[in-house]
Image (tube, rainbow, N blue to C red; front, side, top):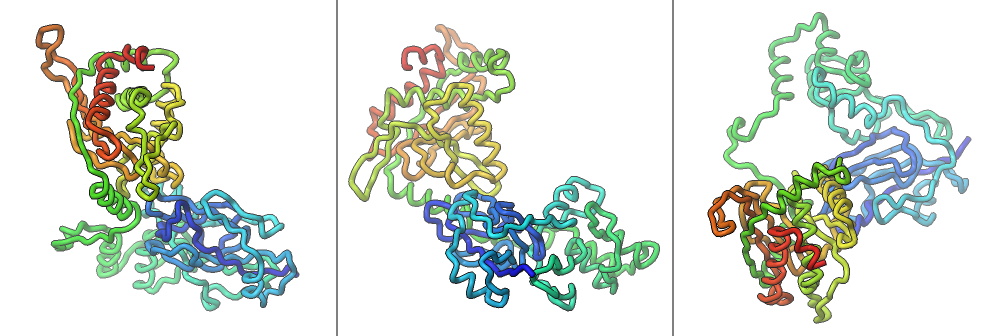
Length: 470
């Protein structure tokens, strides 16, 4: 008989000394067999939503925290049953777990030492495997969210006769909470119902058909409809909606307050005729070297900022209050503010000043797509040196952006509008953009800020200026 033991996985520090994270969702359930580094959960730190890999190969025995719970770093969140290669007896699992040195990762993706030499076996109906096809099929019940199953009780699933055998608790029928509630109201045992949905999912129609011909009492139908039809707060008669401040939004709020009341902000504005830049952009899109690349006005502005920083390096710096020093960066980690469903984030492109125009366009596209999907890593959210916020995509012309903490400047890019403009001593319809530059007046004086903004504007008004400034 192969000995097994229980291993606890404690919430790791997901980067930069963060003290807590919120459990967003579980990708596994109790009784699932997982492999090393298999994604088991999504957690939201103060900066981003990240995927949490399994540090062990084994069977999930308990999920200690529910989705939506904020957990402190170091607190147990999941337990595994793994093979005990050291030969400890199952009864001594807790003692052995405390005695053995831990090799848990302190950053997502770092992996861990395989605790089991046996080959993990995938369950036939794992929750995570069935989630995708359920969401993709609109004709069936809404896809159930991956919920942590409660600890399995012997009365429901039977008992495990031997820890050393491949005998695991039976899996409860897959269904959504409204379906389980409907079955309970009708006195239907879901163990006896065959699921017709993808992956064996039990739907309301399956429950109706089980009780005979699909006829249900009116009260049960109304109750099921109430369970499944989401209502807005206004429809429910609520005059207020309260949302807990946590995760990314909590971090962003604290950072913005700290920045606004720590760094003395100055904002300058410059309206530029960017018709030549837009014409260049149109030509580049039609050229073969740029085929398949996403080129936007933001791509041109980003390149202009990188070129202008060579002539005005004072804006690529940081104020070190603790050491009373100005830190001048000889590299550019270009931050791009991104509005996501979870709040504002500012991921950055590392060493953006070393990228070609094509590589910069690719990096910008990947950065924005990753941010909108909520998959930006903590590493990509730290270490920025200067930022750009594109308010033009919302049809806004100008603003006074707040500095990203630890940076000397941020440039807001307004919408490109066709406007009557003086051109060659005549009034013509031209494409015009307003640039708004906020900077830390401790680091950057008015002359430096003005020269930088003028250089960015000159590059957009006449892209050929890049040859003179490069």
